[in-house]
Image (cartoon, rainbow, N blue to C red; front, side, top):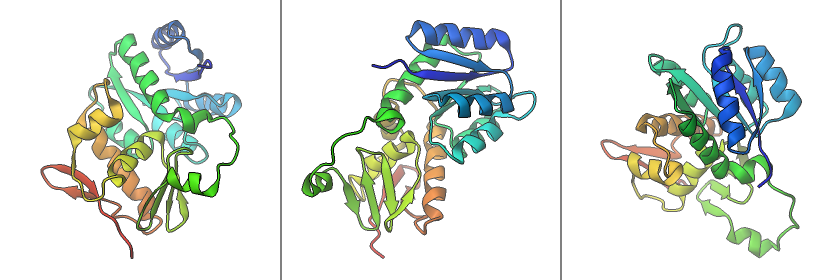
Length: 240
């Protein structure tokens, strides 16, 4: 596996040193930033594979940084958040974050989260160029259901043939449900399928679903995922 570059952003030097040490020990390359604008500048300069981003920063907060990154990139973002900042954590996931870790955190857990996110999005982050497949072979890799089309090999999503930009986590969630239209998935099932051995709150799934709906809503597909109250979520094929 090629060495991934991680951008770690926190204004506490002690925390950035812990993050840097843990990630380097796991085989990652790491660059750091201590403020929002500095983080954005380094992101644009170095194009990291993933950003570990603190919510509270001295100039521009992490939510602002996330929004600016999402204007041009779907690079995974892992938020760091204090335990008493639940609103910020949920907001971070809603505007495009892939996961969050609460402070104080275990360096081992942080590393596991980073590895899990990169495994889910490896093809979307840095997929090598491949020769064009024959038309029939390409069609076989797609999921087409009503007005929705998903291309798993390129992590591309379309609604009425209009592209919809999804993070790797959002794509995996939608692909899981679209492969079985009408089947209700509980939050626990979706957590197990997408996060596997990583422990996260079921609120994380709610935030990702909300974000998927907003993105498709801008294309006229706001009901792409429906809520089954008291159980979970499902995808229902929409032809009109």
